[in-house]
Length: 179
Image 1 (cartoon, rainbow, N blue to C red):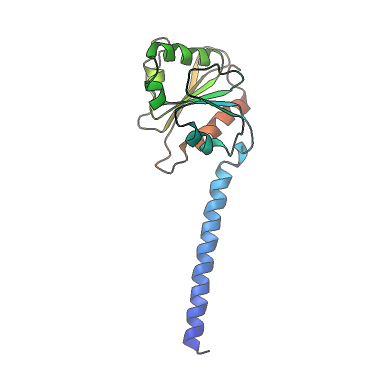
Image 2: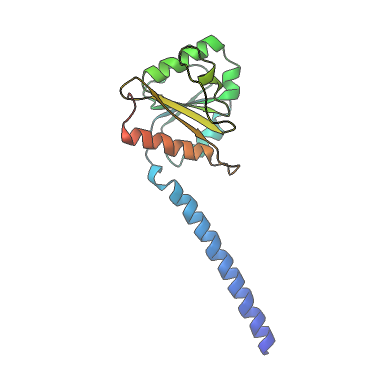
């Protein structure tokens, strides 16, 4: 084999090998990002017409997922995820009462795409959330006198729901909420 052909083969192997290492490193870092919450099985209720999409995004962390297209008892759920599009099709006053009752009972409530369920609820007195985020979450602090909130924007990476599940896990782990 002539030296030039040997150089081309060597360069090709080097480039392909480097690309494989880079891809493996990126995948490992993404898995590591959610590693602590993996398999924690926090009971979650999802209210949405498209619950399978949401469920798939948090399945790394929990298999204890109930879904519904109707207002339903949260039962043993520690978190309820509400699709804002679904919520807009519901009776506003019933949704306001439902969200307040969830928060009062210590359930972590997450709303997708808009904080309106928190902001428009006259009983909750929320004033603001960070704008243009993918998920908005809240729960009542263990002393019952205040709320802890989170707004997550994933910058278009499609990981907002997974990051939100990790945030929910952190709150459950800390035990700083009413349940």
